[in-house]
Amino acid sequence: MNGVYYEYKYYLVDDIYPDWAALVHSFTCPTDDKRKYYKKKQELARKDIERAFGVLKKRWSIVRHPDRIQQMDKLRNVMYTCIMLRNMILEDSSRAICQDEYNDAPEPITALNEDEKFANLLRTRRKETNFILQSDLVEHIWRNKQHNDGDDDNNN
Image (cartoon, rainbow, N blue to C red; front, side, top):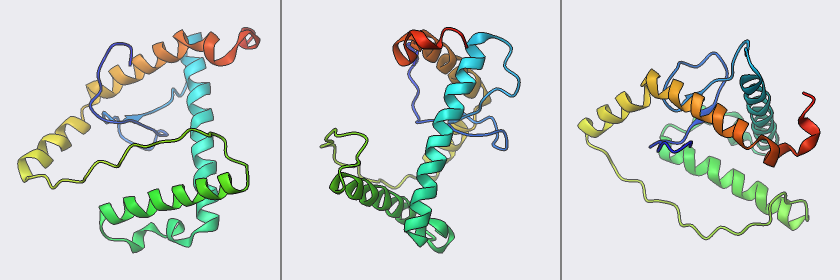
C-alpha cells in the first residue's frame, strides 16, 4: 500500500477496537477532503461486510453462535465453508456478483512456538503501524478516487 509492505491483512473496524496494527478505524471528525472521502469509503465497505454477515447468520445458525466452536482453526474453517456455500448458492441462482475463478489452494496452518506467538502478538499490537497504515490507505484511496468513482463524485 503506497509503496509500503504490510505483513498482515487489515480489518476495518469501528472505534471500540484498540489501535493495533491490523485494525483500521475510520475518522470520527475528518478535517479535510481526503479523510472525509476515506471515511465514506470505509463506512460503505463496513456496511457491505455487515450485510454479508447478516445474510450468513440468517442462513446458518453456526454463524449466529460461533462460541460453540472452541478451536480457532475450526471456527475459521466453518466461516470459510459458510461463505463458500453462500457463493455457490448465488452462482447457481445466477446472482453472483463476481464471476472470477480462484485456483489458489489455502495455505497450510502451521503451529508456532511460544517465541513466534509472542513476536506476532507484539507486531500486531503496534500502534505506530496502525497510524501509518491508515495514512497509506487514505492516500491510496484518494489517489484512486477518479478511477473508483468517475467524474460524478466531484461535488461531494
